[in-house]
Image 1 (tube, rainbow, N blue to C red):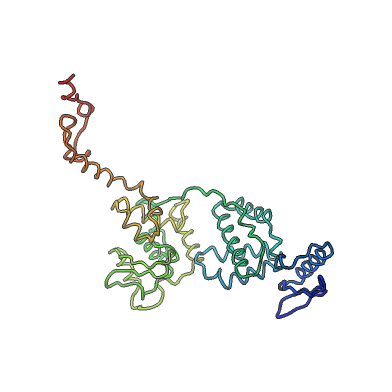
Image 2 (tube, helix red, strand yellow):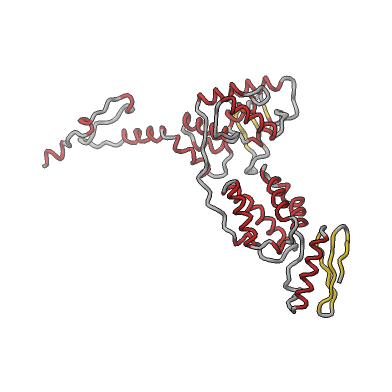
Length: 359
């Protein structure tokens, strides 16, 4: 029975049923002592079954391997934060010490301190980590997150700026973030997509932006509007390569918050600039299919959140339908829009001559 170091990790060695066993624990000696004590207790109580027993691996070791091989390649600004958060929470435990109640308590704390959505993202992160551990043969117990339900999230928040608020916001922008905010308002691109733009992907001859790295994984092309073209040409100067915007997400966040304060705009995030573009696009064009392509939505269901702003085309369509329906003696044909014709109660409720004659 011993604890020893091999290749920078602590191992435990012990005898059971006349055979010598060795297990890798991780970089923490205290965890190695716990693992050895647990094995000795199991042997003494005749509850040691090596063929069925779980692999004793520390959460820290598994989390670090998960991050290097899998997590750091995932898209999303919250992934590094969640990695640090779960490492701080469970870094001193073995994987098999994270039971269902332990997982529930952690998820509930996240929900109480932040939001249901944030708690669900941490749930997904942990569940993925345990799934990879099982797939890679690092852990042979059940995934504790599989028995933890995610919370019901509120409906998607839809906050967009009015024309007056847009003017206030742009007037309050510093020269450093004015073109970034304008780009978001005139294209609907995500923050990461905007900050990832390079002059090699912006064609001011054809007025097209080519997006290669997108959330959906599918490239897309965005037309450059005349107003945005003016801004980008002024920004480019003599540059032909490199990033459009030399600014970090943290600096942009700080500057944007200060801009909102100067403009007197509350309850607004940078991502809501994307909602602002989408909302005004729909209200002016009534074209949801085109909006889906511009936003890069994988499913039309995502674009449907803006459908309530697109009532004009339904009214026009109904009037077109009505004009082609010939119902003699019921109502006069509608040849003009309601705004161009005065309707009154007597007109709409006039008696049906056919029914009167036969009645």
